Length: 200
Image (tube, rainbow, N blue to C red; front, side, top):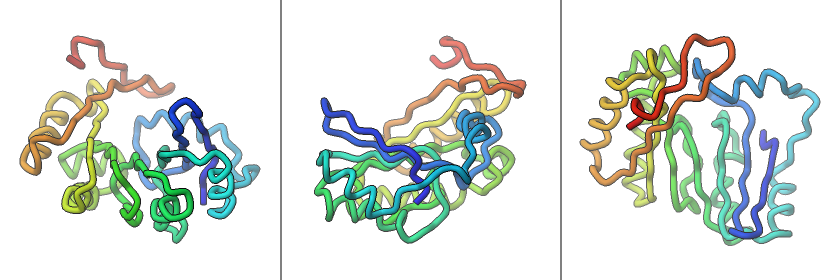
């Protein structure tokens, strides 16, 4: 698996598994700045067995799966179920929603929706949002707790697009928690961070 970092917080009993790389190519991705400095051929990624053995030593009560969304692979697809069966912990998935693993073992999904308009989504990420929005319904139908976030980027993913996302969510379930995140400036791009008034 392309997990490049594992963290553990003994105070909360929670661990995090960080994937590197992503199936989207978002124009303003903060992580792309970091990925560009990483020599992937120099990294050694842990196998599923190694990840499980590391986690067994600390016995977390919850594990978050986050960072880049990987391409489909057997280990990723069975990761939440394996965490449930081998560690006995809850799994929380932070995702763009394009590819979902087996949902068995997942107690919460935090999905980042980039744009409601498919053409805007394609321009921003390189991919259609149809699968993401379909997977959002799959998560709700499975009875899994869901929250959604979107990034406000003045001049690119602006108020109009945030409102489109909010309206779309309200047609599915008015009770889905929706967070608006302020864009962090990425070097070399013309977009600025929103101010507090814009976020409010």
